[in-house]
Image 1 (cartoon, rainbow, N blue to C red):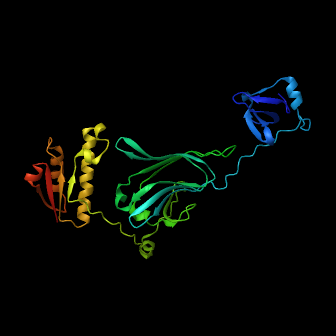
Image 2: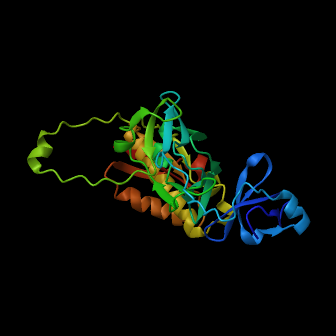
Image 3: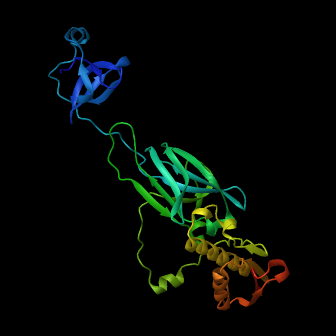
Length: 317
């Protein structure tokens, strides 16, 4: 095979002329309209000698040295963000923002009990954004952990870059401090960069810490729970048919703890938990935890005529 030979690609219908030979057994083929395409040598075959002679380009010297292949320039190498744009004081729109020159094949998931729930996935093009979903501020503590994974891709040659794997679980004291204009969206957002280098700041001595002004974080409104909380597992999880007894109990107890703390924080006087009768395991564990809770005045079986022995009323201090 020589420069100027007419060749045909084995796995497609394209034909062209050998323009030059590159490193790693790659051949650059000139096809229609002068477009040049790098192809592995094993993926092409020379057509008949007569056709090759007709398509030979005498202007290209066979002795011309192979030119150095330069990688594509990635000017914006970093700039992958989670952006939470306030719609009002109750709701945020969650976006993924790719402000780099890379195309990103990606997944965004959140782990659950022994599973993961997919939130988004596909190809996030360079200099583009994607709306994932709307989130309620009152559910901030229940957003859970976001797991973002991606590869870095661009057509042609480019510097090699390792995949990105990032786990994000937000805390109120840092989440609401990062409000600034989001790239590409051009909107104010709570912005969190996924591909930023972690910076380790030098420790401050005690005197410097005392002189630093304290920062105030806007309080997150506490949702007032319902007066009666049903802890039956079918009310709490769509996956209850595939859960083990231990997983069910764990979900029920976490719901109990969360709703009790919300009731205390919102100033409620009492709250009732429906746990059913069953084998008594859930009721026993609830009563054990209530008995040692510093903010519980007392607890008792709720209205027997309404709930039987399947509910507990909690009086809050």
